[in-house]
Amino acid sequence: MNGGADLGGMQGFGPVIEEPGEAHFHAEWEPRVMAMVVLLGATEKWNIDQSRHARETLPPADYLRFSYYRIWAEGAQKLLLSREMVTETELQSGKVETPPAMIKARLEKQQVWDALHSLGGAADRLETDTPAFEVGQQVSTVNDHPLGHTRLPRYARAKRGVITKILGFHVFPDSSGNDKGDDPRWLYQVKFSAQELWGPGKNPRDCVTLDLWEPHLVRS
Image (tube, rainbow, N blue to C red; front, side, top):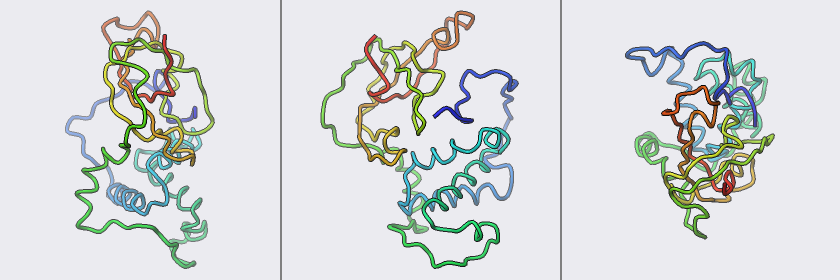
């Protein structure tokens, strides 16, 4: 969807200021939010794409003013409410008033390290066909503006690029994030020139690479 999270190429927000030696967290509550989001994800009440969609569907004004982990917290609350794991009253009061919801799984303390360092393969699936594109092939992205979750950024739609890697056969977030199942597809690394994305005034030596799924692409 086109929401507050899709900021690539937008102007008027000022420069990105690098913070030397930036801390991982900027407030005491932030690591607690991260821990809660990881532990809630392990319950299998939702998947990572649905979690991202919960955050990106926050009202744009809120998304732009909230800090990074405030966005995580707000997204988690939306998911907890939609799965009837808490009530609005419980969120406001901080007190449990209803029986706990049944969950499929839990993440024990001794499992945390392995879980956090193995997420990269969680979306891998067995190949059921062959890639439609090959390395070095020029492709174009589709010009699609769905209402639901998509991993094709707004600034990269209807643009021409070149396949630089074939990254494997993975869960398709545009399906998974919208409660339509895994629907695994081929994933590619695609390189775009900055001029293709943002016009002839950009540095001709600059480029951007995106990981895009096969349904996002057509032959140029």
